Image 1: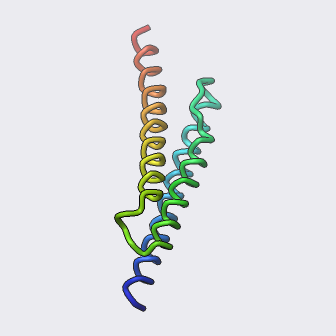
Image 2: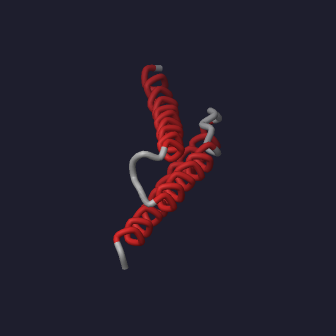
Image 3: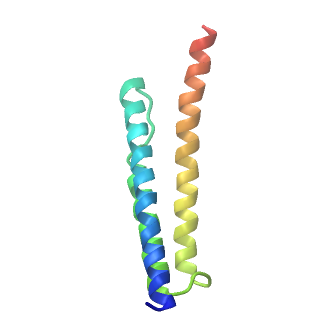
Length: 103
C-alpha cells in the first residue's frame, strides 16, 4: 500500500464517523421539532452530510490536501452550514428553557 492509497483510505474513512454524528444530530433536531413545535430544519443535516461526502471524495480523488479550490469551497459551505445548524438548535433549545423557568 503506497502513500496515496493510504491517504485515500483515511480521507474516505473519516466521512463515516462524521456521517454517524450528523445522523445523531439530525435525530436530536427532529425529536426536538416534533415535541416542541419549533422549526429546527433537521433535513439540512442530510445536505450537510452530502457536502462533506463530496468534499472527501474530491480530496481522495485529487490525491492532494491543499490547492484544490472546489474541495475548499465544499469544506467552507459544509462547515458554515454545520455551524449554523448547531447554533440554531442550541439557541432554540436553551432559550426555550430560560423563558419557561422565569415564568
